[in-house]
Image 1 (cartoon, rainbow, N blue to C red):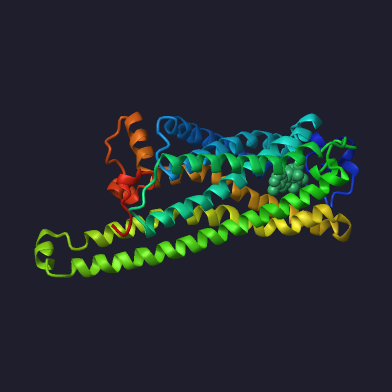
Image 2 (image 1 turned 60 degrees about the horizontal axis):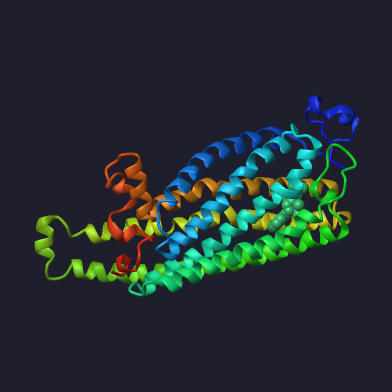
Length: 365
Ligand SMILES: Nc1ncnc2c1ncn2[C@@H]1O[C@H](COP(=O)(O)OP(=O)(O)O)[C@@H](O)[C@H]1O
């Protein structure tokens, strides 16, 4: 049973309980609630703006379709933060804590795996565009991508729904762990879902690594080609105009932006998936674990879960850096010049993954 001894205000009759294995500590009760509150405010602002902008951008490329799905997932994730804040800081009523275990946490995980799956698809799309820059899209392909998006949401909702339905036990005390609300079947399903989600994550990580290895090779080849051209016959002319190093510079800028997806994926999701395995086992096979070890796994899971939550505020960076139509709409809205921040984002279609087939310029072009 979980007890609250860290905060006498909320401790009630529990204050005399043995607290060695209590989940309550400054990190869970104060630090994370403050961090999640901050994340909620930033996430609402950035994702609210992203929704507003994407409503004005037609779904004309696979990349835009995938980004729109990620925005929706991020908005859902952001909405779950206040519930987590209230629950973790012990300010929530029992009813609200039950709601967190049954609904809002499940929505959090649902949105996280939606993002992971679409990150995988984005990498495949990026790879396809880099290796085969002139292969465009058409309305049939776009329709297929929309159907695929619908299928992904349906699959994950069906997978997660039993976690809501089978979290049906009545808590026996004011402070409880989510796993204590689960029926026998609910615990088993919780374990299965976590295994499936591990497969989803590691499968997508592999996809991302393979795709970015191929992209790196292609970028390197195209960089070598550009370099040999720029040091060729026209070098003296180019040098006199001071443009010899330009392709090199542009290429370097593009590389950094392209790898943003990879960086966000690694920072946000890899640590959590290492921590989640032992934590799930400690939840479902509790008897074989010492309570201090369980507590350690819980804290590890909570800390890495925060990194995963950061995803909801880092994704808007991807929209900004990799989608030119997003930047253009944003700058128009803010009455800024179109070229604002071009030193950061690179110029032209080189750094644009949102472009339609005709504008499909990539590294190798
Ligand atoms: N990968 C997942 N997909 C969907 N729901 C999940 C996933 N992992 C956990 N859940 C659900 O989210 C709720 C909170 O789970 P968890 O974070 O493991 O518990 P706790 O908050 O006690 O550490 C539970 O109902 C659980 O079944």
